[in-house]
Image (cartoon, rainbow, N blue to C red; front, side, top):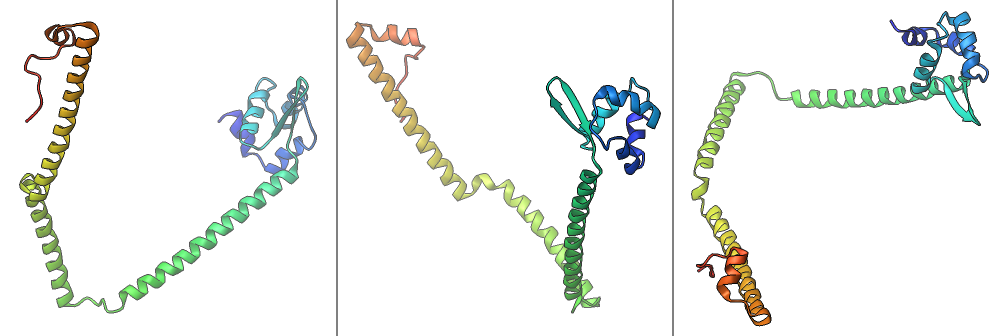
Length: 201
């Protein structure tokens, strides 16, 4: 067990009696070995652990760090935690009561009978059958008229976009020929445009 955990496991009131005043690290390095039996070398590490856990406050003033842990802060923290836990308990109790009512209400008319058992089996069988049919329909999804129409529409949009870009390329080629006197085949070769480049029918 580490020195830090042994100090934290100690009684809170005893722990706080050490820090009912404001101290510097050097003061605590003298007090802690006597009061808690912690080696002076470990005090800084234990103190930092307590600061990180919010059990000890620390403030830098000038070039020095000052540490304190007043009992009133711990008391307020415990009171706040108690209020939160009581609120959660109250909410949990209300939810539990509400669920119990729902269960009781749901039990009305649900006596186990032969007919109920038979209907439950039939329902289970129908659900399995529905899953099989859904899997079967999924296999033939590509032949679904609605899916085919969506594919046709997507193809139409893609074709229009491709022809628009083809139009843009032809316009740039025409501009380059006029502006710089380039030949069409040189432009094609320079920019990697295929010889059969044309609009999509």
